[in-house]
Each structure stands twice: as structure tokens, then as C-alpha cells.
Amino acid sequence: MTIREALTQGVARLRNAGIENPGLDTALFLAFILKTNKEKIILRDAEALREDAAADFAGLLDRRIAGECTAYILGRKEFRGLDFIVTPDVLVPRPDTETLVEAVLTIGKDQELTVLDLCTGSGAVAIALKHELPSLEVYASDISVKTLAVARENARQLLGSDGAIHFLESDLFVSIPKTRFSLITANPPYVASGEIAALAREVRGEPLLALDGGEDGLDLVRRIIDGAPSYLLPGGRLLMEADPRQMAGITLILEKKGYRDIRIYQDLSGQDRVIDGIAGCDVQ
Ligand code: GLN
Image (cartoon, rainbow, N blue to C red; front, side):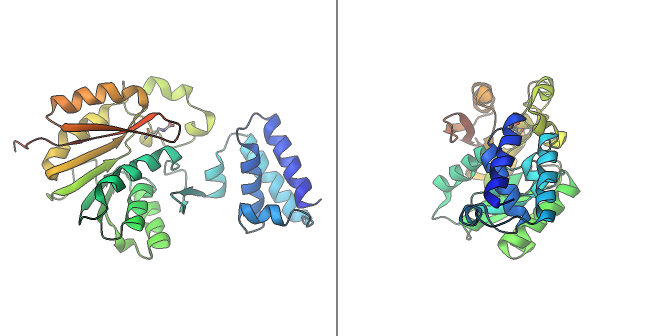
């Protein structure tokens, strides 16, 4: 079988199983097996695929068809052009979350800023920020030790050292040292508990801890909004990812807590995805 035939067969198998983006997944699986990248696969498509490679390829297709997500099968996911390690202990970085990075870039370009990234997961937001703005001082926290181990390994591989970011194990602000940051970012769990069961099969394989935001999805969002003013410098901003349907509710919560200059940013599909505001005077 040639690589071209393998591609055609793979796409057909995934398409028949109702998998979205069968072409991309098939190319990623072949690239993984042949230890190359998806662009090069196309250039080599007249080459023969060895029998053991063909069997491995079929095995990856089987796992995908059985409902495992592509990123967990490959152990990798690209975010902001960087190749992140992902394991079932972390949420797979989403293209939508690039909006959070872009929102920081609109604020932070020429300044010396310190950023705290809560619920850092794989470290995608924190590491992409440090990679794109090396002058940023970046702190990143997560409640899960296993998750932080993945984030640290990503920092080692993508930034050269896990010391490039200050990693902290903390339940939101509970164990964060009393420091003041210029910006706080977060992609917290924000799915309403009642909606978890209706998520795509792949998403249900991701850590519940990273998805379940309580009854209306806003349990952690509320805690972050409450806690952030004590950790932000005067004029400091809180930026959070959320569901487009939650933006009106979050705007009200922010306003009630004294945040001002509230702005909403759209993701690649034009949906409201990130909200930010400047914390009001901290009464403590
Ligand atoms: N955007 C994610 C989803 O599609 C939710 C991520 C989160 O809760 N932070 O399910």
C-alpha cells in the first residue's frame, strides 16, 4: 500500500464513522507513524507504507473511531504554533483559547508586565505568552499536581527550562503568594454540570475538573472575579475565557464587583470568547 492509498483509506474509514476533519486526522496519524509532519506526508505520497507501519496506522484509526480524541492519541496538540504535550490529565488546548493569548498581546506588548495564569492546564496560555513576549514575568497555577507536571514538561521543551515560568500548585488564589500582578488570565472550567453529558464524546474523555463549572458553569468564574482584585496592581486587568452564552451574565457580575472598561473579544468563528475588565479599588 502506498502512502496515498493509506490516506484515501483512512479518510474513508473516519468519514464513515462520522469523524469531523477526517483528512486532517488521517494526515496527522500517518505523520506520527512516519515521524514527520503532515505537510511532508503529501510530498511523499507515492512511497510505499511498510506493513508494520500500515498496521500501526490502522490501530490509530481504530482508537479514533472508538472515540478517543486525536490529541490524546498523538500525545500532542498545536497551540499558537507550538507543539504541546497533552495527556488525559490536561484539557486539550483549543484554537478558541488563542483568543485569550491575543487579548493579552493587545495590552502587553511594550510593557514590563507580570501575569498570573490560573487553571493553566497544559500551560498552553502561559507558555505561549512567555514565548511570544519574553519580557513578561509569568506565573502559572493549577489545582492538580499531575497537570502541573505536564505544564512543567511543556515549559522545558518549548521554553528551554521550566524555570522560565513560576509554577504554583493552588486552588485558584488559595495558595498564591501575596503578590500583585499586572494581568490575571484564566481559562477556567465553565461548562454547566447539566451540559457535560451532552458534550462530544471526545470532550467527555477530558478531565472533568477542567470542564465542570457547577450548576450554571460560573462557580470558578465567580471565585476568580471575587479574588482577583486583591492580586491585581492598580489598573490591572482580569481576562477570562468563557462560553459565548455566559458573557452577559459575567458582565453583570464584573460590574457588580466594581470592574470597569469591560471588553469582549471574539474567537476565530466570531463567537464571544474572552471577557476582560480592570479591577476596581481593592477594599482589603
Ligand atoms: N471550550 C471547552 C469545550 O468546548 C470548555 C473548556 C472549559 O471549560 N474551559 O467544551
